[in-house]
Image (cartoon, rainbow, N blue to C red; front, side, top):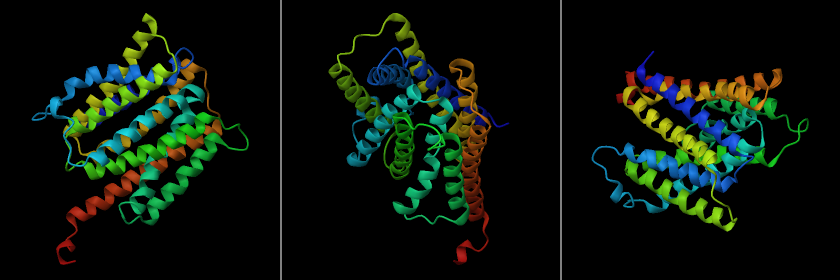
Length: 295
């Protein structure tokens, strides 16, 4: 197996373990408190992720300030709502809803970027929603605020992808990460203080540092993976988090999805993979198509 793919699997495992730590802290700390300290610790570790030729001192310089700030704000809001989802509903249900993000990307690509969306990608969208319905089963289970929060996270994550596509060619990585960290500290810190939150105890600080390390470690591993393997080879590894959701939920939180929920999770993962591989085939055809220079 390609080293880049292995690093990507490690990255998503790290993200999943970080999410599990956050879920465990839900009964002890508030959402904004978890978000602030996790961002702070992740930022400390990500200081070592500066790409060559870039400087953290100049992260604030941007050619498209509105788009950069919109990306940062969508990321921060998604982080806050994600913590709420993980700490209030079962792991597998949160992941199933959040994994609607690639399907929202398909819809937004058509509406915002005016990309052509073919029958296969629409089939994946329909299948993905059907899979989520099998997991969440509205009408048979009580929907909580965490379910709605996770669905909004999926939409915000899709918006972030669309924004990053438009920013990738013009903005530095330090700019994108720097604004995200700055906004995360300011917004979550302000809301944390407004709620009158006290400092966490030493055990909680240790867990928060572990959550931050997991987030930063996942980011570093993912960036290293992209240098060793093409993006379309790495993309399918994202769905390994569905497996982690079932394993970690069962091991640490006594959450055991029933048969229909497991089928739904498989459908969600399959729909996402269908989108990834269909795009991979389409791009591959464009690369070698002998008629492309005549069209």
